[in-house]
Each structure stands twice: as structure tokens, then as C-alpha cells.
Image (cartoon, helix red, strand yellow):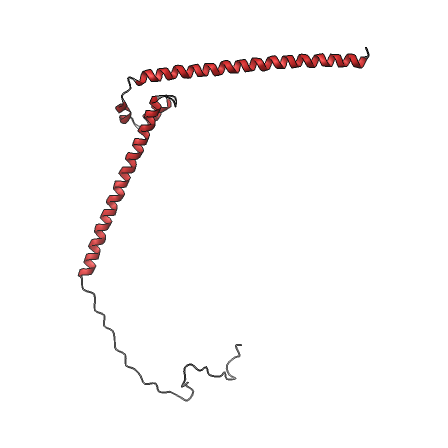
Length: 168
């Protein structure tokens, strides 16, 4: 066997060994990933079972009395698939609607006050007599030319004289 064939054989066996090690490492990493995902899923299931058991003793009116900060903490301590999380979402929506109703009532009240003020101003303006304005009478002055240069026909444009600059 020649030297190059021997080198090729060594290189091929090193490549096969590296591929075997890579394959073992990939399989080991995949196994660890599967074990980790299984552990996470089991932990979620255990936590969800605990939440469902605790839900039986939960007083919904307690959420109503919590401050926004306490409600946010309550929601953060439960997973999104738990019934407590759903109740917290419903409580947030209830509070939002209550705030919207309060602001709508306030704006309706302000609008009603504006209507009353406008009606009073309109009634006050319509019940007072309008001021009588004295319009001075003007006498019509007879059109008499003051001098010969005054035009007799106002629609006719007089010709330009040499004293006027040429504007065209």
C-alpha cells in the first residue's frame, strides 16, 4: 500500500470516528432536550393541578377588592391556562368598563350643562330688544362736472397723456 493510500485510510477512519462522536453528541443533546421538555411539561401540569385545586377555595369577590397592583401580582403568580388567570383577565375588563362608564357619565354631564347654558344664553339674547341703530341719511348730490377734464362716460377710459408714464 502506498503512502497516499495509507494517509487516505487514516483520514477516512478519523472522519468516521468524528461522525460517530458527532452522532453520539447529537443524540445525547436530543435526549437531554426531550428530558427537559418533559420535566417542564410535568411541572406545568403539576402547577395547573395545584391551581385548579386552589380555585375551589377562591373567593371571586376577593379579586374585586384587590388593588390594581395586587391584582397584577395575583395574575402573574398563575399560569395563563389556569382559571385564576382567566378570572384576573375578567376583573381587568370589568375595571376598564367601569372607568369608561364613569368618564362617559362625566362627559354627558358636561354636555348637559353646556346645553342648559346655551339655552339660557339664547333665551336671554332673544328676550332683550335689539338695539336700534341710527343710520344717517345721505343726500344725493347731483352729478355736476367740476371741470372740463372730468369724464362724462365712466366706462370710457381716457387716453394717456405725455405726462403719464407708459405702463404697457
